[in-house]
Length: 490
Image (cartoon, rainbow, N blue to C red; front, side, top):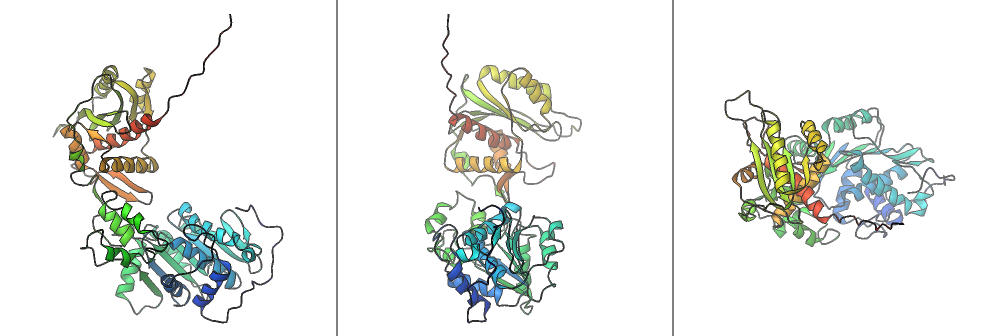
């Protein structure tokens, strides 16, 4: 990235005088002349919008709608197209043609900005007229800008834009979207584009709300909605080529068919694949942690021998919930067995987890096995971890942050469906894994209970499995440090 504003900026008009008065036709000529594809297939070559992409451009630039909703599967170059439209608007729509980009977070919004920034850098005509900053581009000759905005409703107050791009509208915050939407009216010509793939929460999301309204009110020309999906064909198998082609206009162009094939269930859950790759609104957005039959297929019936190098994972609470300890062998394909489980007896409201007993069980295991790590989320177990650490036992904290849990859940899921882990067949572990579900957020899937009810089936051993697998496989691939030879002088 070129740092800071340029010392000398060309304030002459762009050498661009299209004969057509239709904005989408102007954009197509503008793209051919000034825009190069910033990455992926065709990177560095002039951007050539496909016919289906020009349909989207006409919705945005020609329809006269104040709000445009666009639903496309992942891999459709949504970000690249919206960035190109943003650069076109900023440079050709006259004075103070301000373009703003929002998404579920600033990192996601930055993807569109970075694509636009790179387009400007690759064009001598554009880069000589536009100043580039960290999260903003500015064209002094017209006082126009292209800017990434913080993903909060408060930051959107008082906006004055001609084009607002709300990326990942399937998961973006509704309060933020409504503030951006209500900022319109200050310009004779302005448009808000909500673009994305359906999010996991089908009950309340901006993208599907726009879709539903457009279907119910076709007479309202202030809203334009377009989708590329295989909706209505949910009864077709997930590998239906007709559905793939219907939902993915870029298939066999810059979206490669083998990539879709490689993501087929059980590598991903069927509901997730249908939503993300076919834009089908599968009702099961939360499901069992593992596909049916997978856990049973990993049962060897074997215990863990004394002296084996293992990790111990601890998960639980002090009263209402279960507390569990799980053993996992240190290996790239680890083996798991339940060490101990403490459960609240029915009707005993005064019961508490016997913390000293939990600690003694860990101490005993450290004598029976070669324990290289004792793993736990420090929440509620700080004292126990401190006590064990003071005894020189190998304590490792595993905070349950979204980023860490998302990565660890994905790893153990992939390992299980690929047959790269095993277990002893212990019934309690099987029950907890069967009770676990995964929830999806913008960063991926995470382990969760089926409900927050106290009567919900327990999943503590499944949570232990996620932690133990993460650390056992990491330990197995970590190369031991070589000790330097020492020389001694007499």
